[in-house]
Amino acid sequence: MKYFHRTSVSPDVVVARAATYFSDRMSPTEEGARRRRFSSAIGQVAVTVLAEGGHYTLVTVETNQPGESEIDKFAKRFLATVHTMADESHVLRGAY
Image (cartoon, rainbow, N blue to C red; front, side, top):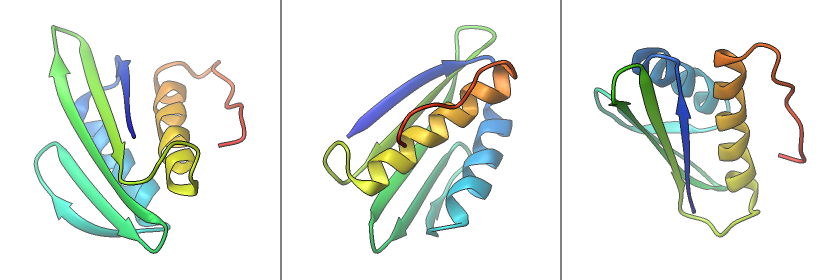
């Protein structure tokens, strides 16, 4: 599955957050300037961050599992935490 999120948080901050968020439960397998890949027994996640049109950052999270798998929910939760970084009033909801 592939998910996208556009945010005002800088690309470097998003990449740093991805490293801390995913490395708690997964092992890093690839590290680039604006790309991280993690792997564990539940699957793989790739996070790509691009500066987009001025003040925005495009965050792409891709898993190797079908939608609603455990790793898929973990990836969606990451995007929700990025939203919280940009908007502190945002409340994390959902079963992910």
